[in-house]
Length: 477
Image (cartoon, one colour):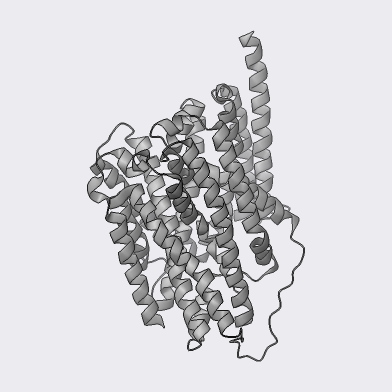
């Protein structure tokens, strides 16, 4: 079972490299590298958005292996929340995103520079969204290395060997094929992920659903407790405001043929993402009953399946889940690398169109990420995964400021609006980071902290908006 799965993993990685590199010879300019020369149609938009969203920050683990009350609540409400959130995001972009963004090559870096006049606010917003994207990338690397440890127990999670395999594969075809190469890979990655939902469930039910548990314990029966209020609030806030503040979101938007193509493709991706997450939830629920107990991590599930090899359901589940998990993390990691590289390019070389310089920047982002991962994990160990919860909060905290600047561009350029919003943002960041990384008493849980931090950012942005508008009114008169 291990040998076959490892061979299939190797074949899939080679396929990713080949497909992702097919466009290498056609890339001549910066626009080719980072925006596919603005020629992505709605089907490509949907495909690449689905691939990037499925595994975001290791999120595939929620739907495959969570059996706790919280996990079940996410399984039930997650697909609904993401569908509503993505549709509302598409509607917001359709109404408020600058028309020029879809008429010429652009990115989140250039968008924030336009929104805030290139002042301190644009730098802060860009730094926060870049840090959030980097965090997502680091967590994906962790998931990949943890899966490799199933095959090679001697692998160190902080070592450069296995980590280089995970980072190197996506960096190589991102360097060669750019965004279009990544988009072309997404169809294959999506197919591998979907295979889990289709094949594993069919095999499970064809086997009669007989439990593989051997300890004689009674079947595991999860409790369907009422969904916690903090989780409802967190799901709503994250799905409404998390995705539109990602570098990747605006990179794809700037790469669309036009506004209509992006909006239609993004709505299509919302439906597909919700369906796929629901399918993975069914897999998780089936495995939960088949194995007899829940799992909190993907590598924990894979180790359990290895220990029970010989059973047809276990063998098929192990192979497909491993391959699909790698496809999911690769699809998120390559998106993060190319969008971070575009951000770096827009900051350090905004006027250069040299394709070799852009390729060098993509490669440098991959190398720096590799070194950062090894250093951070070597220093913090398993505490590193704590950044997972705050990564979402970092993204959503900047959403009110960005959204209001889009709705009223003249207010976005107001120094008063920017300073009031940044003061609230600083207070919100303090709440989130203290709640996540310290044990100070009376602080809210990370879920509540993210929601409370968002509320602080929202109130400060609204106050700044109203004050700036009141100040502008007499001046206009």
